[in-house]
Length: 154
Image 1 (spheres, rainbow, N blue to C red):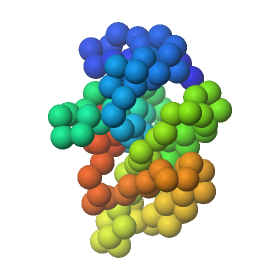
Image 2: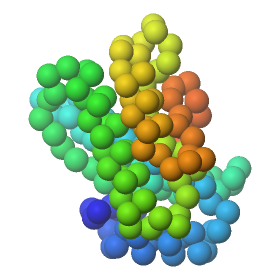
Image 3: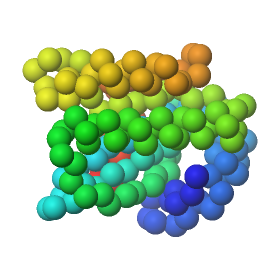
Image 4: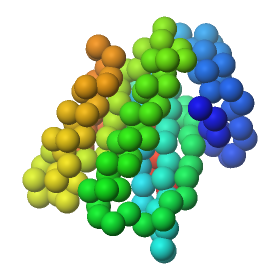
């Protein structure tokens, strides 16, 4: 898993080393992961984020961006967002299993008035099936820090 950067664009180097070093310096930090995307012209901008939440004292995050062709449907695009988050969760469990993810966040809404609700059940179930025991799965309108950060990057 590579290509993650700090705000400002500087590479974090090895993702596992960066995460372990950050947690050593801030042992009470809670990790949130999430992905968001947005249509920009004829492309889709995608950002996946690892956010370190420092209680009520703020959030530090690192990110990875992608530039993708348009998806056929909004459902396909939302599934891709979840896939990127799932990939990151699986990477955590294989590469640094001792690190606990506090929350996996997905940019879908449980309210049926919103378009993203069409994949709510699928995405929530998918994440609940892969996250380690004790990891929260957050959706809109929950307070999401990783997805909010990703949204600001796309």
